[in-house]
Amino acid sequence: MAPRICRWVLRGLPPLRSSVARRRLLSSRSGSEQTRFSYFLPAQKEGDRAQLLALLKDSEILPNPRGHNAAVILATPNFIRLLEDSEFVGEFAKLLSGSADIDQFHVLCAVVDQVAPALGEPAALHGISILRGYLDDTLPELWLPSPPRAKEDADSVSALTFDLGNPCITLPLTRTTFHNNRTSTLLTSRFDMRQTFPQLVQRIEKHSQRITILLNQPPRSTADLGLWAPLSPITRSRVVTESFGNIVRGIQVDGKTEPASTELEDAVNTMFRHRSAPETIQGPMGVWAMITPQRDRADLESAPDPTPILQGKPVSRDAIEATAQYLEYSYKSGVSGGGGWGPKKGLLSIDPQRTHFALSEEEEMGRFMQTMNNSGFAPTGSQIQFFIPAQAPPEDMSCSTPGIVFGVPIGTEPAAQTEVPETGYLVSDHFGALASQGVFVSGPADPETGITDESKLSVPNSRVYVGSGDRKAGGIMGFLRAGGMADAATATLM
Image (cartoon, rainbow, N blue to C red; front, side):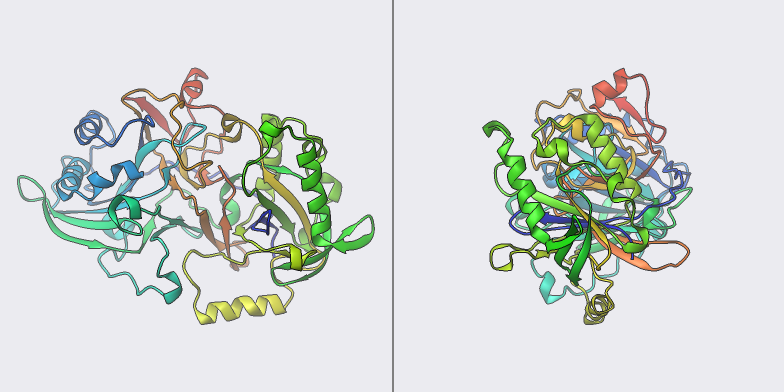
C-alpha cells in the first residue's frame, strides 16, 4: 500500500494518491521510431484549414524518412469541423506521409478539452498535438471494433489509453454534443495513398483506443512519472485512527481521536474568515488529501505548514513550488472522490473511482477484498493531510513541462490574454492533452513487486508527465526571453 493524494469536494470529498519514489531521469526525446509535435493558436483564432496546412508545410518536422504510416491527431473543439471533413484529413495524411512511398496511411482523430501547454502558458490555448509512427507499433488493433460498452458506460465519453511502457495513462475526451451531436468524437480513417490525392477507404467511430508511445527510456512504474499539483495545505498531517474502505472515521489530534471532518471544517471556516469578499471562492471548492500508509509514514512536522493559508496570507510562487515538490516526491498515483457531511457528520468519504470505464464484477470483487484486508484508501495507522487548489494567479500555478504531458486544465475557456504570436507557434517533441474529468494512471507501483495500482488525477492545472525534468514558470514569451528551452522541446514561431 503506497501513499495517496485524495480529492474531496467541500460538500463532500474527492482524491489522488502518492509514494516516495527514487526517480530516474527519463528522456522523452523521440528516437527515429516516432515523431511528436504540437501546434498552438491564439485563443481567438479558429482552426483555419489553409493556414494550418501551409504553416506545417514550411516546418522541418514533417519529413518522413522512416516511412511512418499512421498518426494520432489530438485537437481542441475548434478543429471539429476539420477533423470530420475527410478531404481535410486526407490532406493532413498526405502532409504527414512526407515524401515516403506509402500505400496506405492511417489517422486517428480525437477531440480533447485542451492540448497540453508546453511552455508554461497560464491558460488554455487552441491547438493540435500529433504523434506519428508505424501502425502496428503506435496504434495496435486500430481496425478491430471497440468492445461493447458496459451498461454503466452508456453516457461516458470515449477515451484514449496511452501505453508508456509499464504505466498507462487514460485520457477521457471532451463532450462534443453541442458541436456535432456526438457524445464525444473519436474517428479513425484509412487512406489509399497511391492516388493523386489520398482516397478515403475506410472510416469508423470508436469509443476507446490504445496508443503506444515509444520512449528511449520508458518508465518502469508509476513512480517514474513526474507530477505537478499546485495545491496549498489547510490542515496538518494527522494519523488515521478509524476507517473502513473509502470512509475515514477518525484522526488523531493532540493524542486524542476526533471525528475526521472536525479539523477540516474548522480549517475551512478559519480560511474563509480571513478572506476578503473579492477573494472568496464562488461555488464548490475542491479539497484533496494526501494519504501516506503506515510503513511509509514521515515525521508529521515535515509536512507543509497550513498556517499561512489559514491566516489569509497571499500564496507565493515559491510556496506553490515547495508544496508541489513535496507532493511529487510523495507521489505514486491518484484517486478522486466525493462524500457528504450533515447526516454523515464526522465521516469523510473518498470516491473510489480509479478507472474511466466501469469495472468488471471480478475487478469489483478484488477491490472489495482489498477493503476487507484493511488495504483500502486510508487504512488505520496511515497519515492524512488536506489541501485545496492554490489561490494564486494562473501564471503562478502553471509550469513548463515539455515532453509527454497529460493533465487537468485550470479552466474550460481559452484565455484571450495569453501571449501567442498571431500565426501561432509549433513545439517539436511535445505531445499531450488535458481532460476536465481528470486523467487515470495505472501500472506497477513498484517495479520490484509488480503490484498494479490505479488512480485518478483531477487537481486543477495538474500534470503527469515524462520529460526532461525542467520546470519553469511563465508563458511562451517569458520562456523565450529567459534565453533557454527545455531539453525535450524546441519552439518555432510561425
